[in-house]
Length: 412
Image 1 (tube, rainbow, N blue to C red):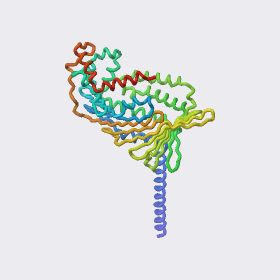
Image 2 (cartoon, helix red, strand yellow):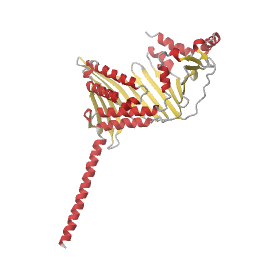
Image 3 (cartoon, helix red, strand yellow):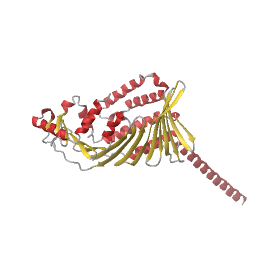
Image 4 (cartoon, rainbow, N blue to C red):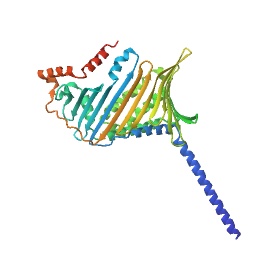
C-alpha cells in the first residue's frame, strides 16, 4: 500500500516535471521565434518582401497587353519654368504595349492629349525575323513607314533587345536571377551590420554601413555572381554578363578614397509584437561636413508623406535646408492594375503633381497590324514626302512640338 502511494506520488512529480519542461520549451521556443522573426535583419526582409509581393509576378502567357497613363501639373511662380508648366498642365500621355510571345510581334503605341484634344497618336511595330521597324503616325500618312534595322542600327543592339522580349522563358529567367541575387545579398549582409532599439514605443531596426563596407559587400556579391553557373545560365549572353561583372569589380577597386568617410544608415520603424507593421523609415548619408536625410512616414494604408533634408556643418556653421516635401498616394497597387499619385513641393521649382495609372491583361486578344503597303523611309516618293509636310503643319500637336523645340534650344 505504501509502495503504491509512493508510486502515485512519483508519477505526479514526473507529470508535473513534464508539464514544467513543456512550458519551458514553449517559452524558450517562443522567445527564440520572437528573437529570430523580429531581429533587425528579418524586419528589413519582411518589409521588403511584403512590398514586392503586392506587385505580384507576370506569369507565363501567349500574349500580354499593358497600358500606362501619365498626367501631371506644375504650379510655379518661377519664370524659367513657365514653359514646362504650359507643356505639362492639362496634358495626358498614354503608352500601350501589345506583345505576342507566340507569334513574336510587338506593338508599342503612344498617345498624347492636350487640353482635351488629341495632340499625337502613333505606334511602332516589330516582328521577329523581319529586318524592318515600322512606325505609324496618325494624320501624317495613312500607312506605316518602314526603316531597315540594318541601316539605323548597324551594331544590331536594338534588334537584339527587341528579339529578347519574345523569349518565352524570360519571366522564369528573371525569377531565377532575382532569387539568386537575393540569396547572395542575404549571405553578405550579416547580422553585424544591423541593430535594433525601442524608440517612443516603436521598434527601430537599422542597417548601418560605412562606404568601405558597402564597397566590399558589392564587390563580393559581384565576384560570387561571376562564379554562379546557374545565375550566368539564366542570361542569354552569359559571357558578356561575366565580363561586365569583372569590369564592375575593377571600377569599385578604383573608386576615389574621398568617399571612405561616408556612412549610410537605413532605419525602419515598426509596431506590433509579430506583425512588424511599417510606420516610417529614414535614409541618411553622412560624411564629415554634411548629412542628407530622406524621411518616409505612413499616414494610412494608401498614403505616405516624405521629405528630404540637407544639413551642412562646415566651418562650425550648421545650416538645415528642407529641399522638398511631398505625398505619395497609392489607391491601388497590384499585378493587373494600379493607381499611384505623387505630389511634391520644391521651393526652387513649385508644386508638382504626377499621376500614374497602369493595367495589364494576360492572354488578351491583340489588334492585327497590316504593314503590307508600308512606305520605305529611305526610298520615299516625292508625293509621300509632300503629303507628310502638308499634314505635319495641320497636326494639333504642331504648336506643341514647336514649343518643345523652342523650350530646349532657348535654354541659357
